[in-house]
Length: 259
Image 1 (cartoon, helix red, strand yellow):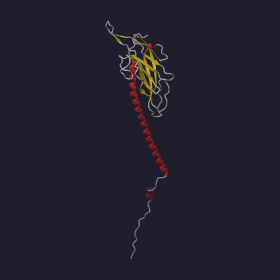
Image 2 (image 1 turned 90 degrees about the horizontal axis):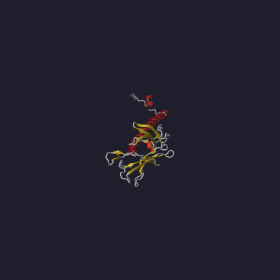
Image 3 (image 1 turned 60 degrees about the vertical axis):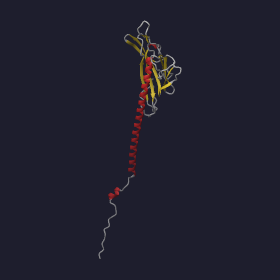
Image 4 (image 1 turned 135 degrees about the horizontal axis):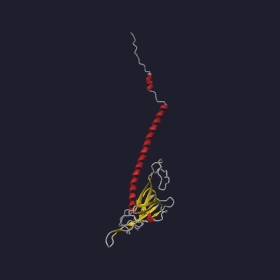
């Protein structure tokens, strides 16, 4: 009787199988970890930049809205200061009274902010700088100043029941300049910008330039500092966005025979 021999397959793996089962070397693992870290860092950097841009956009929109309100309020009361009144004599006809100087300016001490007070008859503009209609006198006397909390405040000093209120926050500085001009039949013949200390004759002032420097909330330490302040000063590098804006307001009515 013949013995049958069964063929037993080899259980030894082939060379290709060995290569497929081989693990990563330490060098390969380190390279992979480095690439993964670079991807994560790039994603975090992009996310941080997007957050910073969003914060800057939000700050910019809020600033624009608040400054629109401030310029409207300042312009409304500066233009009305000393406005001529319509008079009707008993003999008939209508005439305008001569505009008078109806404002005072205070120069800030050192690098401090300037302040401005304007006044006009209540019947010319019925609301004070806070929007109040009622008042103790027929004259509205608005004082605009920056307090120690970096707030632009206003107060109707002619109203004994009024209290100082903030119009907007984040105001670091307010500087004023005054346009001295001479008028004749063809218009302004000369113009010179001076500070309150250089102002000798308020009757020659035909316009006021208001410069306001504001700051926003902290955003990034890497913000550009190209813009300078109202006095030409270098702005702080503390991560807060800052804006410097100027507006010029002329008296609504100026006598043609201004000296």
